[in-house]
Length: 49
Image: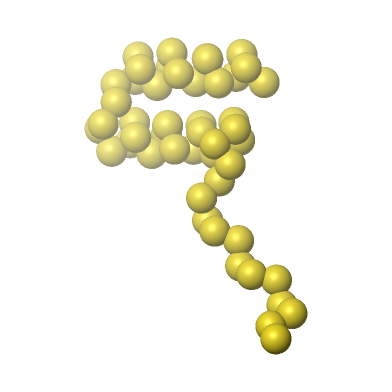
């Protein structure tokens, strides 16, 4: 019987604001969203903290 804890998946919690901001920044850097989109969404995430 394996008593070692299973490795956690790398997917962050959907409620983690830091993870959301990091993903948003990746989308911006990849050119998938505009700076305006980034700024709006960032403000929403920060306001919800």
